[in-house]
Length: 183
Image 1 (tube, rainbow, N blue to C red):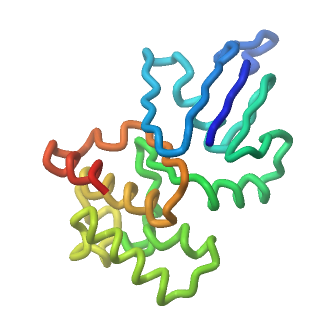
Image 2: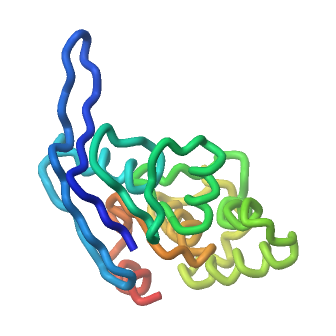
């Protein structure tokens, strides 16, 4: 599903470069659960952003579902993200003026699903995370744990092949964490 070989990424710092990823090799098969661990500043988020097609690499090879990822324009990257990837960001990245239901349904809109099917599926996923009754609430009306569950529902609603998560259950209690991992 994901194959990375000799991946490098640097960022310019004035006239110098900060070499963040140095020859990363990673092979993840479909169905595998992988955790990337490391100290703060070790490049975990950079790697997630590259795998998630939010950033590009400098050297090496990256294959997603057999497709070599290189020189993607934003439209092609967005199409691949929508087709294969789900994201749970540490900061949730919910749209503040959209309800929980609208936030969860948004990736389905980009998939081209009709309004009725988007609504039904988004409600189903809100139910799975225990938030169906909160569907019409805005993010500022939700607790941190509720926002995180909305973000998880949004990441899973398109049934992606890969879910990229940055501390996806950090704001959840242990019972809710267990229920999230079980669906």
